[in-house]
Amino acid sequence: MRRYQVRATMMTSNRPLEDWGKLIGDVPAATAILDRFLHNAEVINITGRSYRLRDHAAKPEATQKKKPKPACEPVAK
Image 1: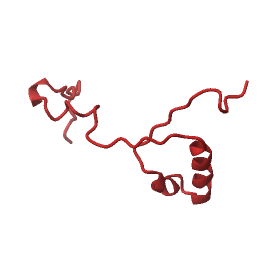
Image 2: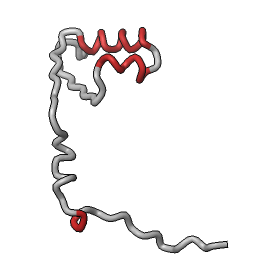
Image 3: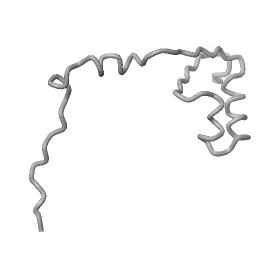
Image 4: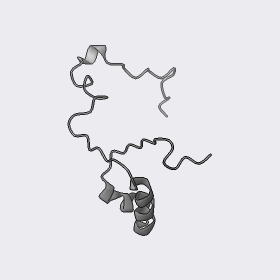
């Protein structure tokens, strides 16, 4: 069964479409990929602060996870 115009596909990126050529390293290939992705697509630009990081800055340092200490200390030569 083919997926074309039968099922929905969602793709997210934290990079603007203009940067894809630089990221992929081949502008014509990036243009072809985006052309196929964006055909009959609805593009939604989300702006604002990250929901994933929204509580990160608000938490005091005491409640944030600390890196575990190494099991042994390096030996000075």
